[in-house]
Image 1 (cartoon, rainbow, N blue to C red):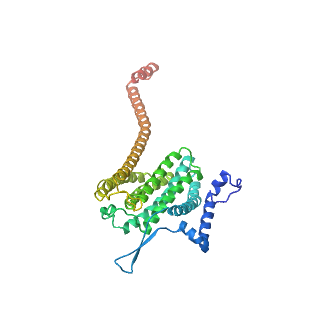
Image 2 (cartoon, rainbow, N blue to C red):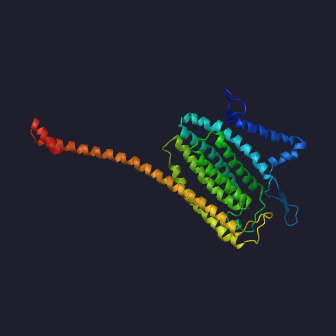
Image 3 (spheres, helix red, strand yellow):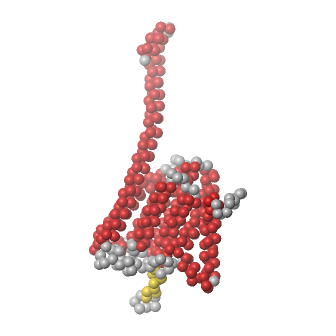
Length: 369
């Protein structure tokens, strides 16, 4: 890991050296980009990495008031790359100065240690994204009026907060791909993490490119809330296995958010955009409101939600079976104890009326059996 003192450093540019110093390298590169702003020659090139591009200014009702909107384009790749470096640095800071210190106190096993780090990183990200996304939704009107999700499509012009939110979301999940190597994730966990990371990248990038930012934002915020509750509950569970109430809240909200996602998706793609369908398919205008695109988007959302529900049901069934297996041995032990006590009571009763001798003891034992 970067940002940590080490006793013995490996050879330069070796795989171990890259793993230990990747956060330092990312911080040096980010500082180098920022230093480029100090020189006039490089400032016009470096500014692409730092600030949001494709600014469009509009005047409202021929007045002096101006409103700034933003579109997307190829230069966003440079901006995403810079904030991906920032995400790598923040990941290392959270890992070194927060999660590693907690891990030393808890003395977790290797399996729990890996899951604790994963949940710790995601909990910070989901909390930040939920608060940020909720503040954007609070300022927008389409949370109260769902028709704004498809009215006046294409929504090719975004406010600064909306575009910057999507830039940071894509940058974070792209950085998560690199962390699979930098964090030495176990081989058993790589397929699972790679699956949900790729799903996040595909859905968020698709909403950004297809000018469905409003729908994507209103679906991301409740989803992030549910994921925040799950990973926070898992962190509490690792500290104390008796703290499991958070999983019950997560299970209820998980099903509700899946239903909300399907409802809004069907309402937007199946009814809303179909009624305001614009003729033609124009990439320049950002118009993707055609039948094939709508069916593809709705199918992708429905398949993803069905897959998540299938994983959720299997997870709950697994926990239910484990709970039953734990209860069966306890019942057997209590039953054997009850049987022994009955035999002892019968033996005591037989001794009360029978004379005491060797032959009577043998007779009583056979009688009891």
